[in-house]
Image (cartoon, rainbow, N blue to C red; front, side):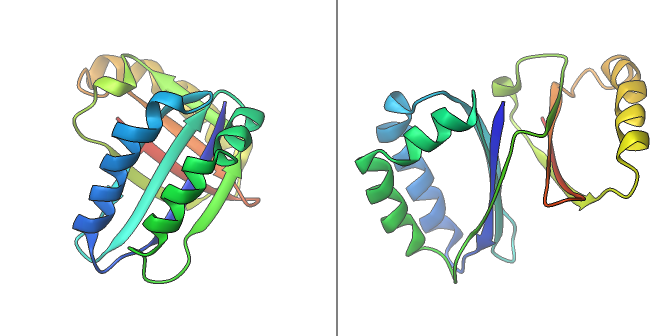
Length: 154
C-alpha cells in the first residue's frame, strides 16, 4: 500500500470540502489504484488527508491524469499557502471492519523514537482494541520523514 499524507491550511474549509466533493463525484470513478481516503479540516483551518493507493506506481499514474492536475490547480486556490505532501509505503493497517464504513475519523500525528517498540505496542494493542472498542473499525498509520507518523483511526 502507498499513502500520500497531504497537509495545509485554509481560511475557507467549506470551499475545500466542496472541492473534495467534486473529486469524489467526478474523479474518483477513474482513479487508478485508489483504495480510499480520510481527513478533514479543524476549526482553525488546518487540514490533513490520507489518500491510499494500491502502490506508488498507481498513485503516480493517477496524479499524472490531466483531470487530476486540473482539479488540484483549482483546489490549491482554497489553500492559504502551499500544501505539504508526505509519500510513503511504510504503512501499518489494523482492521476489524471495513474502514470505508466509518462515520468518524480521528487523526493523530507524532514522532517515534523507538520504531521497534512502537510496532510491538501496535501488535499488542490490536486484539485488545478489537475486543474493547467494537466501534473502532481499524486504523492506518503512515510513517514518513524518518520518525514522523500520522495515524488515522476509523
